[in-house]
Amino acid sequence: MSMSSPSPIPPPNDRRSSRSSSNANAVDDTDDRMTVGGPPSSPSPLALRVSNSPSSKRRHSRSVKVPPEYQSLDYVSTPDSNLVCLICHTPFDKPVQLSCEHYFCRLCLDHAWALQPNGRRTCPTCRTAVETDQDIRPVPKIIETMLNELFVKCPNTKAGCSWLAHRANVHDHVMLYCEHTPVECSATDCRLQISQKDFHKGCLHYTVSCENCHTSLMKKDLEEHQRNVCANRLTCCTLCAAEVLRLDLKPHINNTCPKHVIPCQGTIVGCKFMAERAEVVLHEVSCAMATMAPHFREQQARIERNEARLEPLTRKVGILEDGLTNITNYLYPANGNDASFPVTDPLDPNDTDPQPDFRLPPASFPTVAPGNDNTPGRPLFDSQVHHLLTLHDSLSEEVSRIANALTDLDGRTNMMIINESQRSKDEMLHANAAISSMRMHLQWLVSATIQQRSSAAGSSTSTGSTSASGASGSGSGATRGTSARPGPGPSATLQSPFRRLSDSNRQDTKL
Image (cartoon, rainbow, N blue to C red; front, side):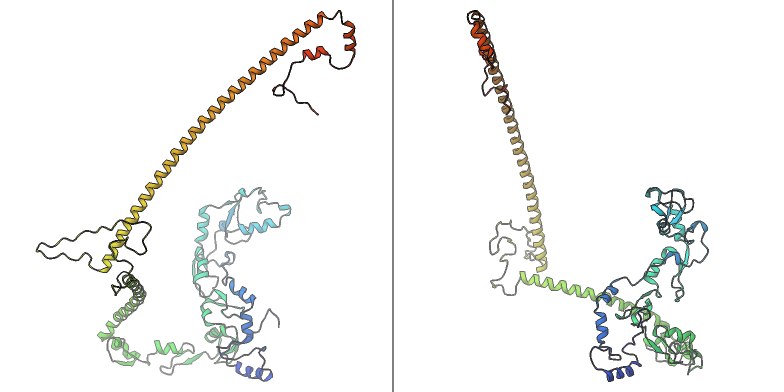
């Protein structure tokens, strides 16, 4: 069996399936075979397997409606040539404007550029190069307004829809309101489409036989066949002998047949007249109860609507009353000596067990003064609910007071932290200034010591050179012998300044 044309499976309530089911059971009674013709409450194993398959779940998770395509819409009148795309020759769909002031549909433009080699993009009309995306600009608003005001027919006109309106509303009509929009069949084992108005009828993609002409056709086409194609579609009314369609025979008898016996419309009020429809029409002209019947029907419908609205409100009021009763029982139990009584004195919020970590001030309530005629004043609270509401207001005020106190305390703490941090910053600045001054004094002392040592080394060098010149005549031979050796002589030792390891001008020996 090919997947392109699957044979329809008859539903369980098909009358023809009883014979096939008996033959199938005679051949094999195993559970692996498909059982056709069973009761509606027992689906076949094949149907269960198909409904639980991953492919079926993926199929039912996708969208079942397809949005309309503007290129395939049927326009009532011929659109203006300035609103027609030069590529698809239909009114624009999401139009764009190029730098050369030519208008095209964006999708048509992308298809045209996809065929050009090396990624080149040029205008399909004048071949002007389109360098960047900035050359593609949106069209003026008036163009979109003119496109939205075009009158179009519903895409499901061939299926029987007679909708006619502006193009701006076609998407919402097809996706939300049109009864002839094709949707996916509600059956889990069917992959065909059905009209939206027949979705609640279940699967209609199986073969049935026309009761009038015994022609085999699909269930979804049976009504159209019996109305327009069937040769035996007409019949005569047994009461008035009028020729009507067989499908419309019952509506004709119940609504328009003049010979059908019906009661007066005033039956809702109390009229007992009953006769043929023609006589009832004449009777209702002079019947006062029939005149009042429409008003009574309207009142009855209004009462039913009000009752439907009142039912959820009644449930809500019952829930609120139960909650209020529970709160009242919690605060005022029936047994006053009960050890579980939560609040010994309702006016003292601190009188609880166990004792809280903090104590709230007692709630303040106005005192009740006695009357002028020495009669005792009325009780402080009219009811327990009044007491509960007053206590709630007192606690709300205490919470507000505590919140304000916490805010004040937070502000004071922040100011204290800011002041302490500023004082610490000032002390650090003074310490840094003292350290800088000490560093400057130390540098001055070191530089003075170095200068003194340099001057002392210079004076010793000059004294050594004078004594050497006085002894040059007597020790010339020794001097020559000594000067002939390599290495520094005594004169070199006297000329070099004395350096210490702590001298800053000392140069490290490179290894």
